Image (tube, rainbow, N blue to C red; front, side, top):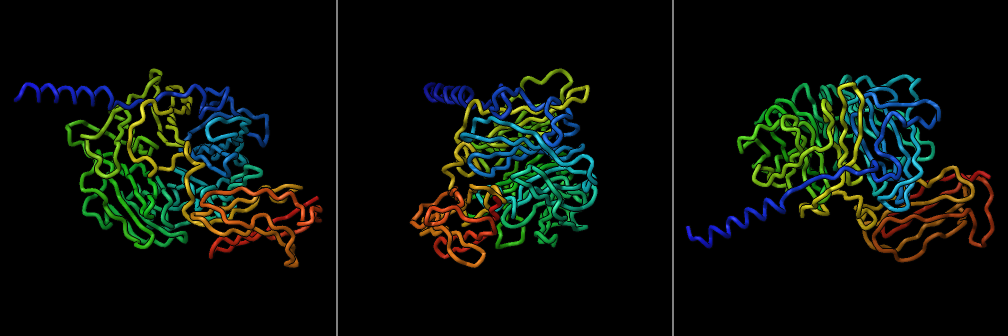
Length: 462
């Protein structure tokens, strides 16, 4: 080999080793909330404001975005109460203050026998408490439990179930392209069901795939700009992560890439959890190596493009239980030998140029454009004297936002102009077009944007 070519090859290998590393830096404050090292048994339930509460079995975490200034961190716990909620009022997307904890009523009848995973059934840019749900997989009952979330009280209340014997033992769930993708641990397959519980298709054992799963344990996904859902499914015993796709126009589930994430480099891999990190790619926790395995592409997840990241600051005997991405951070749930759970958030220490905007990156959320027209329920409701009305525009449109009384008479025009694509928050101060305060009662606000029209009711109480 030419000496110069050999030297250049060595240099390129050194550059890859020096600059291709990825590491996660533990944040001194959980989710950058000032004054909080991590969630712990010092947190309490706001409904009582007196009872100390420690996590019994934290299983999953979701960040609910109600508006650009109102976030809720919701932790699913296998013990009671199942939902531990932290209300976070924000001045921007990354600096939090005024944190309040709350949860469901531990004295109420428990509708869940064995909660295993949680996701959001969300249709707009922000979570709409009227139309959207928190969805929990109940492994003991072959069903999904759909919960309403109250933005005013923070209560999480059961709405209804989506059930089917075909769900088997659901241990994971993802919502996208108008359907649920449920991991059935008993039959080692993915079951796609609609909102009524009707089975649209299956994938895996007894499904459309000729390859059988042996132990499917986790699922993550996102919907790209073409409306295609990308699903990442962990098969622990087969040491692989499958990349699947689905579309709303077709009920089937397809294998996206013929090059799957397998232990093809003789590395014994024991994957358990998968999550998607903005600016990084696919992140898997390997129970055998106690490492985070990161792939910087979503097309072919083989070992040649994998980066390993160490899990730092684990105390002796501490075990990782779950990894999740929430609000652009990597959240690690771990348990010590004496059964104490810890939740810690990690930022990205070295960002790799990967999928970029394909992921829902909360750090850039204020410039992420909506994908459909949407009118949200006003908040607060009932209200006195001010309320906020939110709506989404996926494209520029002539917009009219008007308020009517119960007789159909126009009371106020809040917007009447051409508006670019984006998410909007409009304040109504309960005054009419003449500047006078209107009386208590039921009012209707109506949005017209291009060919889109929708309206909702609101109540003013003085």
